[in-house]
Length: 397
Image (cartoon, rainbow, N blue to C red; front, side):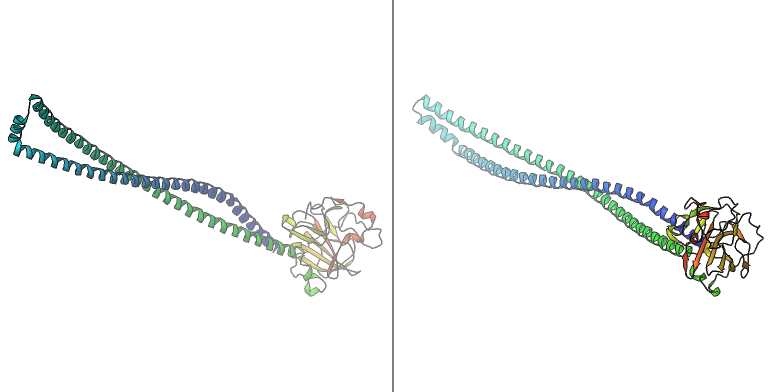
């Protein structure tokens, strides 16, 4: 169960790592896209302003063309009237020309009068010719101006059409980038939700594992019917080299062969701590002794073995109900040297130190229970034992 929980936690941790690593990628790409959107938005605005300016120029040019057309129409009217007046004058000269010249000749009192009349006639004809030429020039200038304005209008309209094409292209690119950002933000949001969900599952699994790490104490509290049922083979265990009894008068002996390496090294005390593998925290129900792998474990007190087998996070486990009413639990054994129902004396070998169950290294989990409650087993030892203890807390769990 614990290995399965650790496997699930490992997969969740990998998933969280992957989701977390993807977040900056989405964030950077979204930032780049948003910068592009800002740039395109400015270009679209500039193109729109350009189109509006060209529309203004077209309107102004059209107004000038209209004014020029009016000037042209007035000049044409003036030209037509001048032509009509000249035509009438020529017609009169034609009809009365010979008689008029004879009359002027004979009515002149002297040569001076005659020359005066001649000069006046010549001046009138010259003036008519000059006025006609000036009017013709004016008409041509107006026509040229109108043509130039029409050419300018055509050029402005072409520029407007080009700007509208650019504006349309930029607007399409802007819309496409906005769609991309919207989709990326949606994916990022879904990823964040998945990350939160994974973290929630991780937390729930950690809590469940922590509860399981309490070593199924509730199922192995008092009655034999509530004890774990999975057994383990009994192997031969050597007699300990040195059994150390406390001088406190309790009759308890130290649960590790005193001659073993690190027999008195405490790696974790009873109480709240970080769970094995660094997964959350748990209420540690016993004392961990970091003795070397294969060190001999002994009965701390005489009593009856009520369980000898595999017990969840404890791994290979031995439980002894002592003569003074306590239950001693030994966890993570490499091998078990007693069988359920057998009697053991204080100092008798019960198994070897290992790292089975929920464990990160070789050690003995030493736990004492009083009824449904777990109590600190170190309280049964006097200063003769306690003074020999050394500590490397949480070195092995």
